[in-house]
Amino acid sequence: MSDLAELAQKISALAAKDTVFETGARVISTGGEPSPIVAILNEIDDTILERDLEIQADGAIVNLIVSGRRLRGIAAASSGADDVVGHVLSREEPDMVAAAFVLLSELCGRAQRLTVRYLAPQPFGKGGERGISAKGLAALWKIDLDEVPKPPMERFLSTNRSAAIAMIHMTDGEMQSSAGDVTALQSILDTQLADFRGLQTLGGGAQLICLEGALSDGSAAALAIHEDDVALIAYQPDHLGALHASWRAILG
Image (cartoon, rainbow, N blue to C red; front, side, top):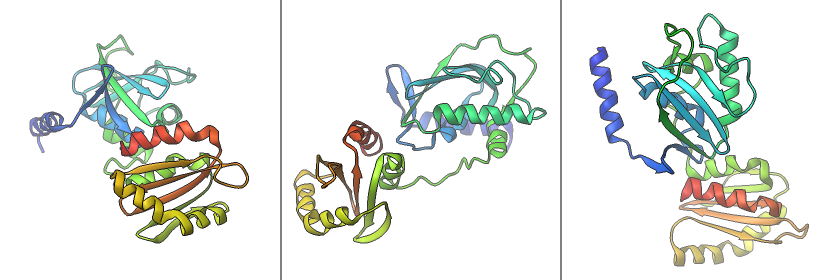
């Protein structure tokens, strides 16, 4: 494909995107879809003229200098990484490229919401260094830009795995996965799932039902229902806010 044809294809794709804006920034990843690093590489690949891409990942901020669909370097980061910030990326310095990936993964890799602002470029490097293309970075970092999105329930469970004491995931009545001691959870599913399904029929759509103090050890339980997927999670009550936030981000 010629450069002009590829550029025309990019412009067409950008025009067709369903964009969501949040306080002036464009949302590029929510609930881990697409994965934050893929979302960042996609933005780099979409950027032709030199720009400062201000990426906000939950509470972290990182500024990338991008030009010609190439990442020239990281101009600023909200924490650490003096060995990476301010340096032009080059294939001749693989340790620097690897450190940039570590920094982006630490700041953005687990973000539930990723946004981007396109700012005017700032002086960076000597002006002649081109950096590394998005596809080149994907190859070096072993990132699949054509990743198949995980189903919503899998993304929800993956996001909250560290908060869960135990969990069960079923699809169409068939066990998909479980973790921890699920004895008490299985009892709830066996005796009360039909009642909760009835509530879903009345309310419609995906539902997250949190049951405070549902288990004998004082922990809470959350029942997540989406189409044919049912998941039950035992968690400590202080994780309630995070559960609700990730549910809204992934399933609306």
